[in-house]
Amino acid sequence: MTFVLRSAASALAIAAVSIAAPTASALPTGSFGAGDGRQVVIVDGTLELSDLNSCWASGFPRDIRFENRSSRNLLVFGSKDCTGEPIATVPANTSGTYYGWSAIGA
View 1 (cartoon, rainbow, N blue to C red):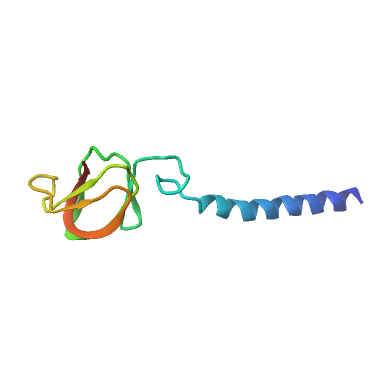
View 2: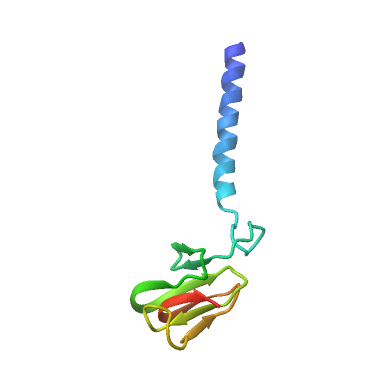
């Protein structure tokens, strides 16, 4: 009888973890929502830029999807090294697709 109770308790614990883990991983982590307030920009839904003081560059100029989850504007450039005049600005806490080559926080 004790074995059955322990087995049932173990099964319930495993079920609780299997439900809670995906739910916890779905919570927002940037400055959208109730996350940790990190200043990040998501590029093309896959790459996270956390050092907004450094120039980030794509391999070539193209349409790039930016999710600016920071409180800073993001400047988009047509050059590979964030030089020259910015060709677009991604305002803080907004998303959009912009044609460019590199970007840096303002």
